[in-house]
Length: 197
View 1 (cartoon, rainbow, N blue to C red):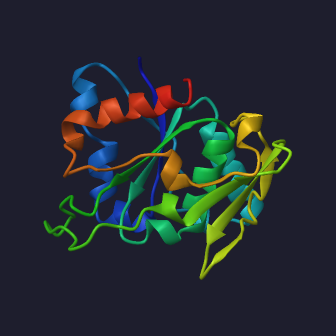
View 2 (view 1 turned 120 degrees about the vertical axis):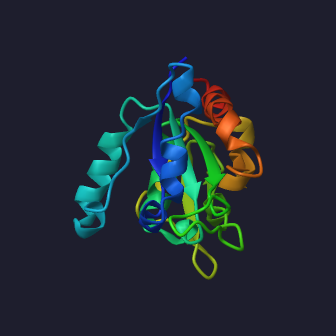
């Protein structure tokens, strides 16, 4: 089944070409399967907050999976965090793909993997099980301001009062170490199936 995928990333990784290796991967094209890129590009950071949110929200319409391309600073980016939480709220499949070991435009790899953005976001289900509140890590856990709460359409009432880091809920792969060239399509399909898509 063809999946429509939203790619979330730090723009520096596009400038360095690492993000483009994954976004333009030919593996799935050989099988006549297309991953649609509805990402927000360089002009978005210059716009006002409400406009950026609307651009992201509109870009997620009709897509089944959000793939976070993880470079060195991806975990710090405000709009990557928003894309992750908004994707969760809309029941999109989510996965992370580390890209630091991909050779950049200078033909070199980074010496360390990027930190997992899913480890910097968590959710808490209310004690009555009706709502979910979101938190982000900034020198300690703080309420996430860009989308602080949503109706609980994700967890059973048995999970009331529980909290989870996003890293407990969604997988992270390395494009190089886990053979993304051949397995990326499978990762996308599994992410979609994990949320019933």
